[in-house]
Length: 200
Image 1 (cartoon, rainbow, N blue to C red):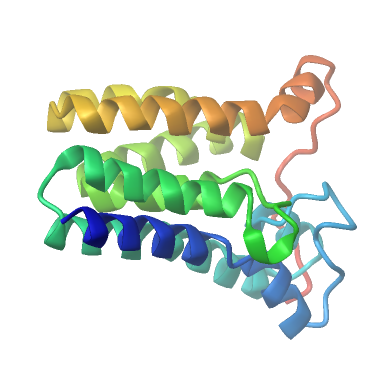
Image 2 (cartoon, rainbow, N blue to C red):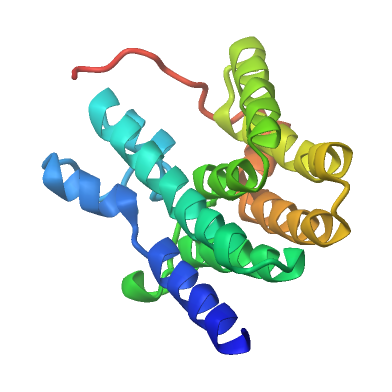
């Protein structure tokens, strides 16, 4: 069981390390998201480059990086803390990808994927939270930060599994840490708002 769990954790990290935004931008002949816009290899920055299609593909790929390993872990690893370890590994892979010099994204979509795979009801609440905040305030980062703060609470209320709540707190804390520059911009009124216009 330990060897199986370790193989899941390593595989989840490697899958998380695939930088979807970089690969999609190359496919669509868009600028490297790490060197333009906000510098973050994520769907929001891809959208800033003017392609909704590329942004949606990036978003879905980043979500599935979290969904796939956690669903497999739930199927084959009965212990909640092992499932949490797999979820954390996938998330860390996105943040610190071994294939891209450990320079990854902020983890919003991948975190959403792992939370949704643990409990779809949690994913639904996080989606509604993000959409509500984004619609009212038009800041992607603020919407993500709000969802991150509420994720452990949603897990506690809907699953009552303490191991999942504990790893959710760690993931949320890392996500907030990765958004520290956005928090500074929000406080100073410098954060970019979500723009819906695009060329494709």
